[in-house]
Amino acid sequence: MSKIYCIANQKGGVGKTTTTVNLAAGLAQVGRRVLLVDLDPQGNATMGSGIDKRALDTSVYDVLLESATVTEARQPSPKGGYHVVGANRELAGAEVELVELEHREKRLRHALAAVREDYDFVLIDCPPSLSMLTLNGLCAAHGVIVPMQCEYFALEGLSDLVNTIKQVHANLNPDLQIIGLLRVMFDPRITLQQQVSEQLKAHFGDKVFDTVIPRNVRLAEAPSYGQPGVTFDPASKGAIAFVAFAREMAQRLG
Ligand code: ADP
Ligand code: MG
Image 1 (cartoon, rainbow, N blue to C red):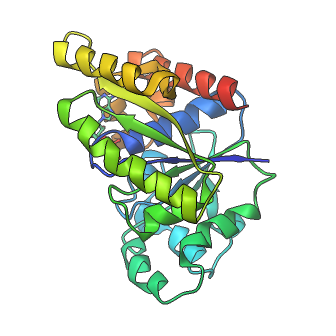
Image 2: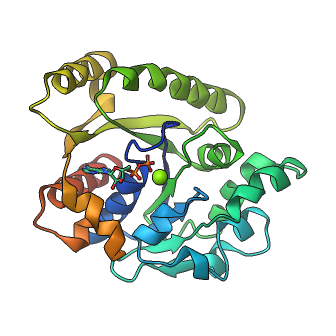
């Protein structure tokens, strides 16, 4: 049965999509069957997996509104070695349309139940907000992976996310827990980053993943080539770190 994880942080530009795409490719590389679900109307995870968001026949929007199943909406990432349910701007409308519907926050959960034997891991790339879309992700998931930069304000933002996760856990999804905090775009030469990293470990203990993702330009370049950094330049520091993170995840969680 698949383990379902949201990659979430309500801040934009913190590395959610880069983490989702490269963890998917890394897990595929270590032999796991992976489905990536793009829940962000920006469609960056879709494009970064080598799938043109403007040319989607069916997307996660259709899945949420039940006009397509996950089986109908998924397609392989050409280079990534995993499957993708893509997203594009159409998804922004789902926010409004879902409000009218019953069980609106559990749509994705129900849709993913149909493919739970097909994958070892389902990774959900969340938008930078605590919206109905993110709520669908949190209701579907067993856990949350929080990528974060080791900057002063990162800790402040974290408390909002932790509170939201607690509320979803209490009211909607008792399975939900924080799997871990992933330090990304890390530059060990910056003293503040080292300090925040130490604070994180002091405060969150073993909820902080051992693997640290360095700042690495190859990870930033890869999306314009339509593939994860892990396959685009396997020898780069960023790719090596994400494969190590995939191994850490696979070891911790099967
Ligand atoms: P989010 O999905 O949280 O908005 P992204 O994953 O899109 O964040 O990352 C924001 C920007 O930072 C992108 O341009 C991405 O290529 C870049 N980026 C992410 N992780 C790294 C990294 N480890 N090293 C260098 N650039 C990175
Ligand atoms: Mg993103």
